[in-house]
Image 1 (cartoon, rainbow, N blue to C red):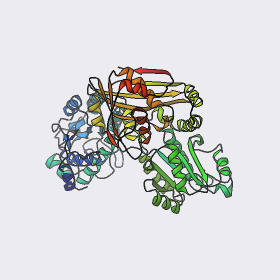
Image 2 (cartoon, rainbow, N blue to C red):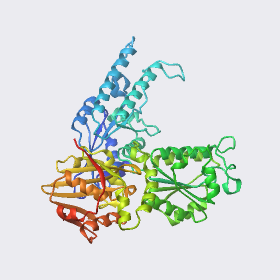
Image 3 (tube, helix red, strand yellow):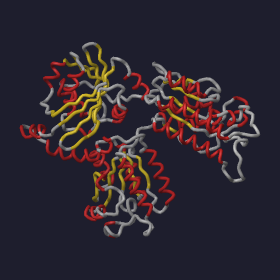
Image 4 (cartoon, rainbow, N blue to C red):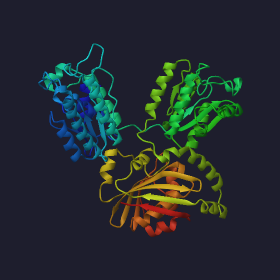
Length: 573
């Protein structure tokens, strides 16, 4: 992006509403970084809003950091650190006398003390979204003594102190970015204006900051081919012992792929298999003890002679996710083209089995698509709960006393977390859940934090388990209470929890916690939220395409189906 384009995006007229605000903490003059950052953040917002970038005083990094953290609003805080902020001797614009008897231990102690102060400030800001960019400018040549080609001890000590600071920040939830690898410094502009970066780097840095501060939702599932992808060879011809993924058989790239799939499964990503093969040899190969991918995490396995597009549809349906959340990887370009043409929502990648560099590049690209900040217990339960859901639906199909007996024997236990502030999992569920979703509305993180801090706001995060095992936190209800009325603005539930009447149990438990006489649902029909419509019809009858659905608490209680709860635990501040 050019500076002129960034200015045009930043100054584009805004629809009604307040601008999106964020804070930029620097010790240097922010100048073009502020413009590029405003443009890149605006491009990532769900609604077209202007972006207000607040900055501090020139040359006062410590003061800017402390004041910003103390007064931070709901928006992110961007901290861009340079060497001169640690000590004047490390800067190019800051005049500093270099004594003949330069005392390195004292110098390093001063920097360590300063970093420690900043680390404590960041540690006390655990409810603020903070992004940290580390120094990219070169250290001045009057710092350190070294032979040609050697890194001086002083520079290594500085690197160590900075690395420790970054590690401590990350432990407290700060998002530390990986700086773009390209020339950054513009010496002339730095000396003339106080802004140190060239335009190309500034654009790349602002884009990287926006990516980390406002990350895209990760993909939910990956569907892999088998022959010449998960392993080298054709299992139908070579047999289960004739396919390989080791170095001895020049098949190590397939071992890479299996290890990568294992890592994705370990963070809760769904892994499915679509292969044109007979099931028997596939099952035998997947049963090998030396397989590096966890076979119990591969679900479902579509091994047959139907088209790959049919397999992908069936896998996505079993997962209950949209095709735009799915990636397909295959070594056959014809299969990839067929899927792309028939299912443009699916992101497809070619597996270059004979090009190790290409496979390494593919893994890096996919790592970005599936990046998550943390792994929660419910993420690790995802595959097991999907398998359980299939079993439960088979048992609960039907009507009459038999079905009721099976509901009664589920042993359902709920945990309602009403604590403030709401756990991050709540916003994650609202923004990524499609099928059981009251209206399809998504929230920007800053707007969510601002709204949920209001006294009238109510947020419930629901955890669930039964005799089939725990599902983790699988539902969220966000509402506003005005007197005796409760307006439900967002209500979502993971597809893993379907067919257990959990949606109705949620309402029953909440009525005991949030006292009201009437409930309103901010309903809107979407392409995929028919499960929500089915639940609402049980409560209020026929539905409009959109509108406020109102029902008295007394009428709602009468509409609820028979529920079987062994326990409902409530967590409050």
